[in-house]
Image (cartoon, rainbow over all chains, first blue to last red; front, side, top):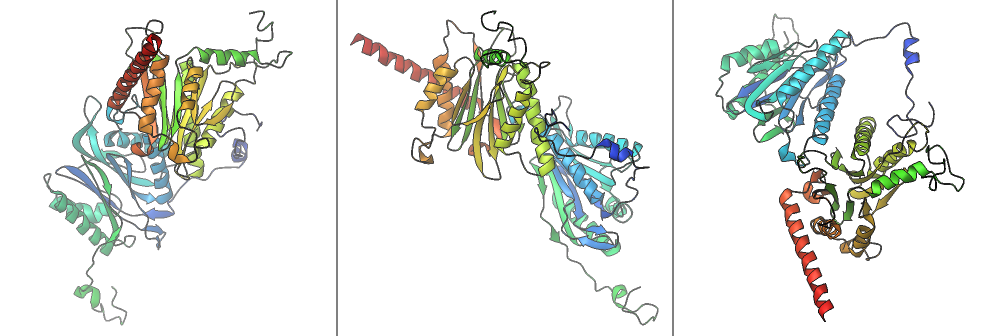
Length: 268
Length: 268
């Protein structure tokens, strides 16, 4: 590349592999399976906000590899995102959404924050849907199911006080609901949440329900962990908890007794 | 024009026999007639102020034709000259900032941002097919890594320096003289303690703008001010409107008092 260049990055442009090296190969390899993965993310609307929950495990196949990986992310002051699936893809989604949020703030109409409208959760969700669907149509999906939590928008563009909870999956399917769960949580947690959910739940009730679900997921999902994070969006903004450990109870008879007289260590 | 250029001013790719590039000088001239832009490095941050002349009584000045823009969380630029040229520089600055962060994972250091901008602006003085930018750019930026703040100015020639106090546009000469009187350069004042605060800086810049303004001769204007300081969490933000209003009131009072003093001296 010529030393004089209009490319961003100054005159000494970083050496990037040219297109030709890629096309010279006989084919390209796509992501056909995830490598480092996070498991379920749970989401629930409650009386004056939305809450997300996920554990902090990232697995490498069946190996519990990273035990303090954060999968709940704040995108702006009123929007949360939680992702399961390929962790590197989730990081890339986070970078993308945060870069967009920063660009929004920089290119806003006014120098004064209070005059400007932030992108609301519903917009973030809708945008993410477009990204995921496009990637899937290029046969190169971002391998994540992503839950977006926050608020929807008023007709005048300001963020409304109506809680929003939506999901986008790796092929661009998107829908909203009052309770959501990705991955194994869709089978284990969602039925429990359906049973207990009320639209007027208090924050404490919502949190207790999510913690119960995470605990049960830890018991039943081999890719889950009892180290978890909870995050909420309310009108006061977003709050993502530090990772903490759930208490577990293993003294059930079924866990202790020898099954089938196999002379093993008590497993099934 | 024959006297100034004599055919050597048709392209910025051509030197005149006495070693000048007239197109670049003309670009600088374009800035010299535009609204005054000031930047001041203070003890706890940087303040910028731009005089935005109102070309038409019917325009909505508060929300259009802005001169100060945010580039990144911790960086802002003020432009004067051809504002549309300046906007190109702003876009480039945003691109450089996000590009740097994407590559290195840290915020772009102020010096690097200024250097990259000056490389960009300079590029337009090299080609016969391009026209140099008719805009000067003040760059106020904070480096979270070194916890230091700085002020740079990039001129149409592509030259860029760091400043304690920088001025561009119509009133730059008297403004520089005024700024030199303020305690802004620690090298002249034995240490940082002598530097004025941003709050004081806002008042002083407002005073300079209003001292240079001649109501009978000059067009009405809107005063745009931004800062980047401890008080704003080191974020580039507009100086609160009531703070500007208070500063302007103070400035006008000062100017009036000073002219009264002069009158009295004359009488004696």
